[in-house]
Length: 406
Image 1 (cartoon, rainbow, N blue to C red):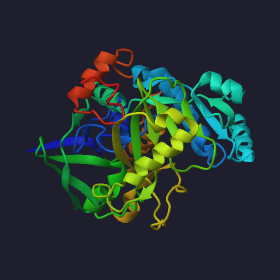
Image 2 (image 1 turned 90 degrees about the vertical axis):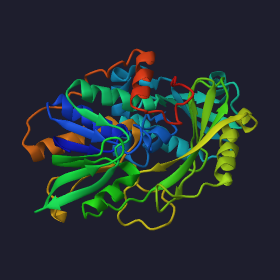
Image 3 (image 1 turned 135 degrees about the vertical axis):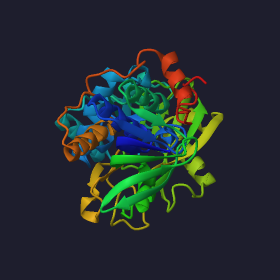
Image 4 (image 1 turned 60 degrees about the horizontal axis):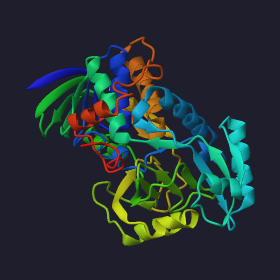
């Protein structure tokens, strides 16, 4: 059986569902397919940090500007998909004070709101903060519940005529005269789609999808562990104010704190080792900021794979790879109706989707503006409705398992 679609989106994470929502709001017939439940890849296996941009302010101005812009957008459209916690960048006595000053100056230059706290003021905000704290800087960080976010975007796409197929792995594509003419789906769908355009939004798996079309997309994925522990006293996100390293972020959930993370290169995002030292290191390093987590009961552990794009990257440390995103038009590689969106961060998923949709509309000759920044997501103010959508799309991931009802 064959169906037609103006645009076929491959990948049901935040970016893929965001693209489906964006295109459908522009009146384009879109079908999204995901090999598992929605958000079953990187989106649902993250630490769920809503970035203020502070983490990147001194090293990647563009990335930081994208984060604070999208942080503000999500606060207006996402409702119960996010939690406004605020965040602290914490300088301990062994940390470089010049790095703190550089980050603070960069935040202020970009327009990221900050508040300087001395040690006593920081401990007033977080009573269990280590006595080794020298000072802290407040920023507008928060928490994202990616299972709800992906499901809400998918529901918006369907409300405007789109089609969402979880558990529908892409098995093959047919390229004829420089165009993808057919995409064969398996799983619960078992049909062929005849698309006008194909968007590869498969994240860390984008290279594998591109291979099916005979195109190279050189991903450089890295794995990272998250550890959820019982802890209900923490209000803001904690960021260690030093060069990014293992165990430098604590994200508050309801009754839990998520500790992370590591960065270890992997060759295959489906087949990689996990190591006990990653869990131990994350707990140990996060406990330097928040000592009670060292002995807090561990609720669950999970690994995620970052969708890093670095065509010239080797097998070394991948922390320095840009967290920016890239829209790749594969016309020059012989497939004119094929676009990949790679890289990026959960916080900037909507902007990534908008940029991709703009590109696709240009290819299709469609003149329609993006509306996703000013329209609230379906069910955004109703947590129970959002959780029903998560169940409908089989979208539960470990990141927000403690929050999303099943």
